Every structure is written in structure tokens, then in C-alpha cells.
Image (cartoon, rainbow, N blue to C red):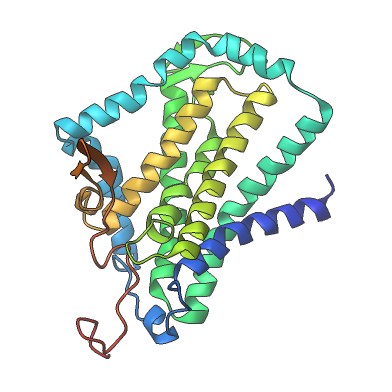
Length: 312
């Protein structure tokens, strides 16, 4: 693909990310008043001091996990172990389905996704400045933090477990340079998931059908973009299946930690999810539901309205 079509693909991807976030700011029956949106405060100060707090939270989190946290962490890493057993079979299956048109399509999708990551951060920053919405500028800050932190972790991971590229061999070594056990490209693509989805695309109790559609559309598009990058790396025989899984896990988990750091920990996540046991004809129904805690995922109250923020 030439530079012109590739640039257009990148621009389309950026719009597909930003437009659902823009739609999510409005209520179902019409857009929220501009002063209401502009009054939305960031979760944490937009400052270098906050960056330092985020560094301590992200890289110090493993030393502060409770039992449930260690179970989730170990389960996430443990899920990658069986992938090593079937990596040869997966590679052969992917390589059998290759074609020139598929290669070109996936290559262009990868380039567009990786190029869109800094552009999306820039887009949130510029719209936040233009519309005087610090919350959006904070999203830009968190996207860059998630990218930087997850990239550094992937570099360490490639040294700790140093695997060959599939096209070069199948060795698995430990604490060696030139390893490829964590896909850096997939890490970059996955790094933008949590800062956007957790802050702009989570379903709120007040959302109507239109808003819910756009939020789901944006979230599926983001996950799909990361998945396409992962498949492209396997299709080009540059990474094994566990490599792209660990890259995805790295970007997603670090992004979530950055969001948690800005919101003072993980309490907001547990407050937004619960299991309900409801009576039903002939028995009971167990339902997994999410009810956002006010002030985190619901649109902010109109300035001056009962229960809302006092006018500045």
C-alpha cells in the first residue's frame, strides 16, 4: 500500500477510536450541555508528580497484591504456558493460510494501528485543550504512560525469557539478549485499550441504546485492532503464539494499572461489578451485572443542579 492509502487507513482508525468516545459524552436524548462536559474533572492531577506516583504504583503493585490478586496474576501468566506446547502447530496452521493479499492487508492494518496510538493520544490532548476538558487531556497523559511503562516491561520480558523468532529457530533461553518472547508491537497496540475503554467506553446505568451501541462498537474495534496486530506478527513468522499473548497481556494489564493509579486503587472496579441472585419462576437466576459507582463512569451532573458541582 502506498503512503496515501496507508495514511487514510490510519486516519479512519483514529476516527473510529475518537468518535465513540465523543458519542459517549452525550446522553441518549441529546448531547449534554457544553458546560456540563467542560466541568468534568480529571481523576488525578495532570502533572509530573502524578507520573511519579503512577510509576510507583505500576512497578510496585506486585509487592502489594492480596491473595485474590496473586490468583489473577498467576492465572494470567499461567494461561500462556500451555500456548508453548502448541506453538508449532499454531505456526503451521497460520503459515498454511498465508497469501500475498492477506499479507498486504495485515501489514497495512498493523502499520495503521501502531501509527494511530500516538495520534489518538494527540487527539485526546487537542480536543481536551480546545474544549477545556481536563479529563480528556488526562486520557492523553495516561495513553503515553501506558505505552512507555508497558514497552519497558516487554523489553525486560524479552531478556528474561529469550525465545527465537519462528523464522530463525525454536530455542527458549533465559536471561539472554536478543530475545523475542514478548511482542513489542502487540504491547503497543494493547497499551491503549484500558485508558480509553475504562474511561470513555464503559457502560453506565444512564446510557440508552444509542450510546451503548457506540461504546460497544468502540471497545470491539480496539480489541480487534490489537488482535489483528497479533495475527500479523504470527502471519509474518515473526512471533510465536505465546509471544503475542504476553504482549497483549502486558499492554492491557499496565494500562489498567495506570487507570487504577489515577483512581486511587482498584476499589472502583469491584464497586462496578457484582453477582446478583434474583428470584425467577421455578427457581433463581444468577446474573453478573455492573453498576458504576457515581462519579466514575456516569456522566457528570449538570453544574448548578441538585447534587451537582457548585459553579466555579
